[in-house]
Image (tube, rainbow, N blue to C red; front, side):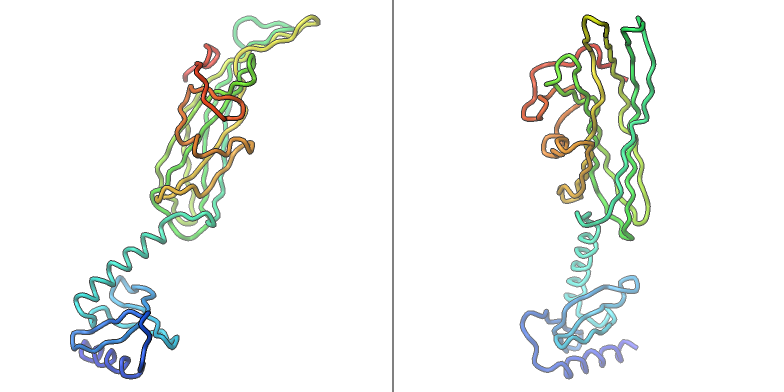
Length: 257
């Protein structure tokens, strides 16, 4: 069987004729050579699919190649497989972010004043609509609240990272760190003021195993800032346009969970 395969290899070489230099030269143990483009390593790595210069495709047993060529083919295929596992921006993913919140009134409350503590339990669901599996991805979820007494200040209330593979035709779910914020509002016929924080949105970003941002989703467009949000931490304060980090700290209305 092996001798027959080597004979086929030799006949292929004779039939191809003069070949161009852009095709790699492959040699068998008998010294016969052909030039071809590698396509795939099939059947658990035992068969090599190749394309000739005239467009013909053929399968050849890996065993008929020289030892050096077998090593080259294995290295090439490992690189091909690794490249196929890198997430790309054109891959269809469904990104779903839920806050799963609860509220309760605390302390003093009347018809003109209201004090609430809101608890949030973030959840992210990522559906990979492709059949291919993508490995080594980093998911970043950042959640923001507005300072009601100073609306030029934005508080990062939660920032979470997840390293995950995205299996083909499957989904992955992860829960971000829960957090609590207190909101106090006072209203009457003479005045109207607020203290504390109010949830205003999130930013979800995915990087592939090569460190490239491939997918983003945010509640509002100004939260699409992966260069900043991959570095920020819970408890940090920023200006409303996210142009600079503020040298200030959240008030007691921000409660760690």
